[in-house]
Length: 444
Ligand code: ARG
Image 1: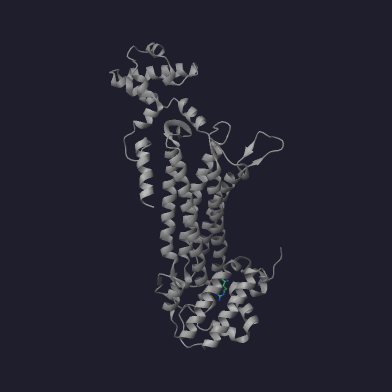
Image 2: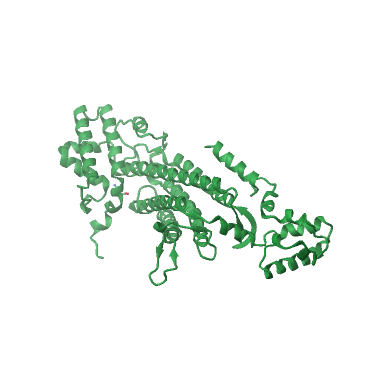
């Protein structure tokens, strides 16, 4: 599609989402101008009232974000002038568009960061609740997608809990990088006006003021950190979605996802497609793309502001909205999923994952290492051919392979006991999982 240069340079199609931040920052700026006697109290009141009206107009959907405004800063400026006349222009004393861009960006990202942290907390609570309900739900633990060792669903859920806990920590750390007040930038070298950034910092809730104005206008490392954290969270969500997709297939049959999150097929009515989970997996690629986009925009830029930087918002807004939507839907999806304990338990039983314990048993009874392997493979083959799990073979059946087998073998290979036998810190044993749950409750 052909575009005019004006259309091409405009960013309002994206940055209109910063309208609230533009108004909040403008209010703080007006108050600071008044306090420093750069404008009168009446002028300040006019500006504040005007800004309220502008905000109300935007929120009621009465404002068309026209290309002519170029960006949200030009838009609010013009709307304010329409309301209060030329005095509106004084609001731009002691501030440049560069000041507005960076201040709005930091305010906006702080809000997004907070909201994502809230969603992550909800996800963690949900996982904790599922874990609490399923401390006794035995299932296979997989490696190479092969049934490897029996675990519990609680253990599996708490593994994800820990990943999301670290994600949350990353977003918390990121807040320290975001929540910094830019000093007066002007074009890049500061301003001749006597301003009071400290007052604005307090009013806007920033932690401190960045020490160098050129740095403040030139860098977006806080956005890069944020988008990196978004990418890692998406990667975790995506893996979880992959588990859910597998688990809800007929082959696994471990869970059933609510119809709201799935689609059916008219020609293949037996199918229930996990579209939401697949889309979360797919959107992970999109967020990674946003990260590469942002990093690449900045890699060759000379100091300080360059118009290239306007493109940052495309990446940041997209990543923030995508992560937020994915987290919210994911939480709803797992809150409502049905868990088929019986099927999980059955898969654990027929996984022959207690062959290791059977080997241990024979070693403890003094059978030589080389012989143990041979016996075990024979027993497992026999069990498979008879459609039985190891623990359901008769003692006479077992004795065909070695007379050493005795009735105490059943305790050794009972799946519950296999889980219970793990002693190490952070293991799947019931005791260790209880410890993890207690620790989670304690550290809330
Ligand atoms: N919309 C632009 C951005 O987000 C700012 C406009 C460029 N003008 C300027 N004086 N820096 O980067």
